[in-house]
Length: 234
Image (cartoon, rainbow, N blue to C red; front, side, top):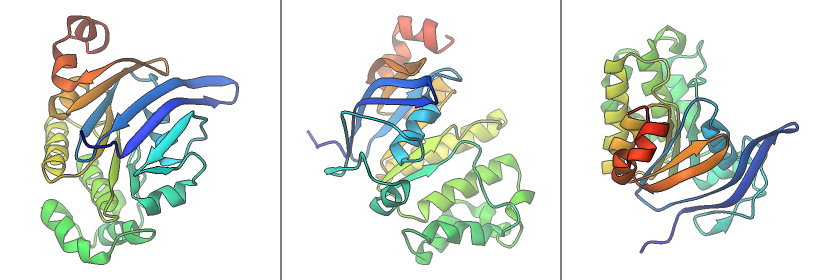
């Protein structure tokens, strides 16, 4: 079996004195799409931020691509290939679509990826010179995803990409994620839309109050009666 590209063991994190994550362990193998699902407040975003290095955390082990990154800064993790599309997209609204994309090459990647990204998201070609703040929510999500892909990530962290989008746009976003997986991109996808996330994932982890409650092949989690009733609203 292929060695994991990401290994997390016993990760804890807190906001002040308030625990946010407790003894979280997971692994991601190259080319996998791993879904992190759970209700709002379960700890998904904190976990993603802890992996990317934005959120302080303590851990028994945190390894990426064979290297210990427990003390690596967020900037160093980006240079190593860990790239996060944050919750809420966090674009630069006054800058053009093209400039937002090119900012993805600041720490890693190359502007030669620009044509490839525009081919993947044709709407960004039409809006290339428009301020990012004038785009619709769905278009902004495509731009945030495109900006991350400009860095040529080894591990792509997607945090709540469906948040605030109409059902039609949610389906479009998840289709793009599935396409990236088919192309070999290694992805960790955290989303409240558990059914949609697990439907395209290889494996999944179900979180509640900062802990991993269930894990396993995504298809098995989708059809596990206990998981369906308690965590998936099914």
